[in-house]
Image 1 (tube, helix red, strand yellow):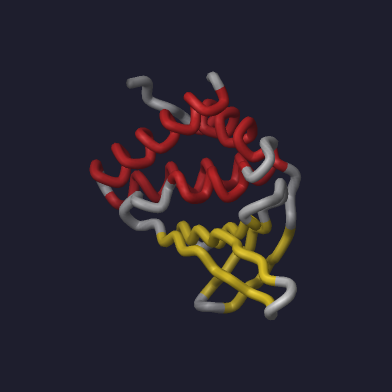
Image 2 (cartoon, rainbow, N blue to C red):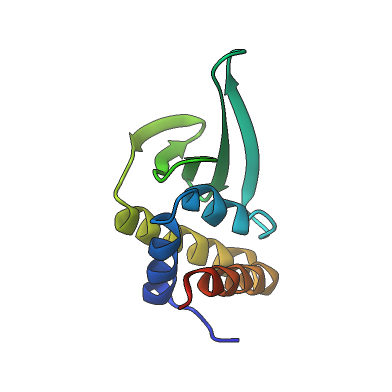
Length: 128
């Protein structure tokens, strides 16, 4: 298995994020990585319910609807969102890759192996 650096991880994530439902697919791929929290959230009322996937890594929280293209990125410090934006796929992928690879370094070899394996799985989806 190849080892993915920041540039390769960004390319893979950009490819996934540009696909329909790719945001939720990309975020869920990292659900089992140590040091990363991933959950499925349902919001709305009876007639208009939406399901989203939320991935928390480092000081960032990424949210993607289950059926959509856009990923919302929030910079959260001590439970307070200091920045919320919906960046383009390439910019979001770059930020997500940086946070995931940085988290993998902080949490040790198990987190690194899980992150690399998740990137490998996503690379097969995009054919890269």
